[in-house]
Length: 362
Image (cartoon, rainbow, N blue to C red; front, side, top):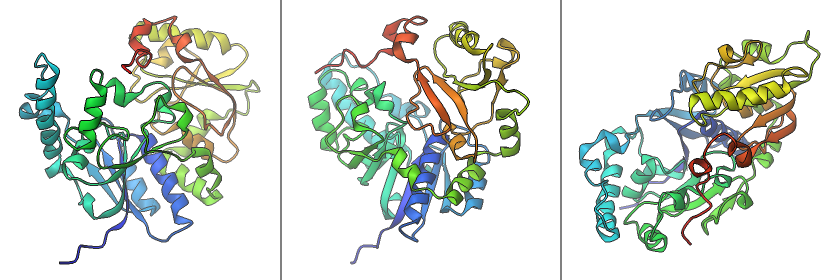
């Protein structure tokens, strides 16, 4: 019996950033091929609102699917194999079963047959979708969770402390699952910058986001704005105030620290700039701190969209973008990028909480 011919590409996304990069990659691919692709939006950890409808309207993808991805905590059976047995051998034996069961748990919720695609791109394969691909023996491309996210967190090694060489070997055999390039069925692990990663896997590949951006046409940028800015006129109106001649600074918040500590941290940043600059705050989607109340007079943009789309707005610029730990190497609308980093965060939070990669097992 002849095997069925595989078709096109599919992207599996968990965040607006993932979806944005998927659209960028597909817009670039369309310049070289007429073959369109499909996209899956996982609702496990993110509310995409009406992004599905906007993606469908854009025509970038043939099909836009929603995926009710199931965490391990939704199944008592799966969680029964996720308890510390007291020794590494027993733990690894039960992890083999856990790996299979978590993958199998996804089966009835997967919205399309992933095995029929020529190329499967999975953002953040540490989520259950990675276990499903391992369970079904489907080869795929893993894509980094966030821009240069490996600079802060060597996710695969952090999640597998102790007996790392043994666990890595078991993942290579498909017995257990390890994300970010270590799965038997992971073809490669795509990152923006290899040098920004802690000891990346051998199958790491570098596809700079700046090079993708350079390949976008003016029409491509318009499509990105239409997809990812649901209320484009209002958002642009907040971002640009012709009556205020001060230079603009944009602060990107993150759900860092406890709420009171977070308010102090970002309050110190606001105080440094508020007199000489027009301050714009773009809260992280999971950051529920009331910045309007905490910092009166500051412009707060609560709309959900990937920050990168601001670079697709024709003529929009800010003088500075400031972040604590979010990587911002490819922010095309900012004249200057201020990355405060872990040394700054150390002043507000116990370093043991956020410095996870400095004492990894060899």
